[in-house]
Image 1 (tube, rainbow, N blue to C red):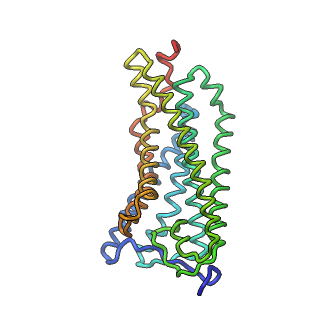
Image 2: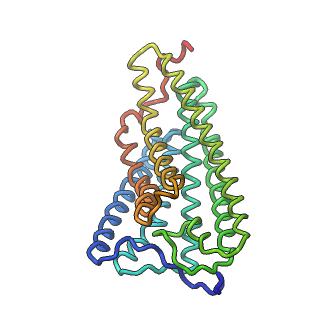
Image 3: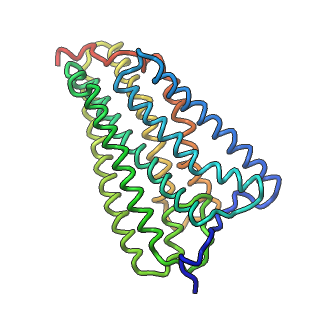
Length: 307
């Protein structure tokens, strides 16, 4: 019986069995990663260089683009390497690093999406206090809270997961290192510690989800009270990109992790994991750029002063 100390590498799930499909997957991943790098890179450059974009909304969008870049650069390069060379190997150290950085960027993205919902709430429901509630110092504090908390969450999960003895081989049923698939290799009852961490993280995530729902309930109530149709359209348009990104983030992650085990299969699991780990970082810049003119507008004030 082997344990984690004797494991030098893991075997990731192969994206395809034939050489032609492996090359096809490599080209697909290359195209998606280049689109993500270009889109998020342009957002970061535009916000950093454009002084008229130095607003709270674009500040958080820059941070979101950084998390998207980090997320896709964590999982895709190794998958591309394995597809190109027809291998499945990832070193023990590489797997732990991949798990840590993926958790770090995904946790940061969720925190940033929650903060961005607060930005939209203040912009629409409390426009007269926007500059006070979301000043440069307040934005910096919120971003400073998002990134270290994501780092701590990733560190705790990674350290706990790789402290468990592994005795059920080294083959992972995923194309990148992910906690549930590593836990399947464990032969220790102490995996309940990781279960406890997962429950705690799930409770925190659910709290953030409730905050987002509450924010948008208040936003929709405020928008519906705007007498001008143009004002309502302008208010909704500033929320649409954020709502679209939220929907993409939550729907893909929920389907991948909450689907019934009765319909689970390696090919379906692979497709769903691809959807929530690779597709959102590439689509998020496109979603925001489609509403670029509305995003450049000042916080929506029309029709709200009468509230």
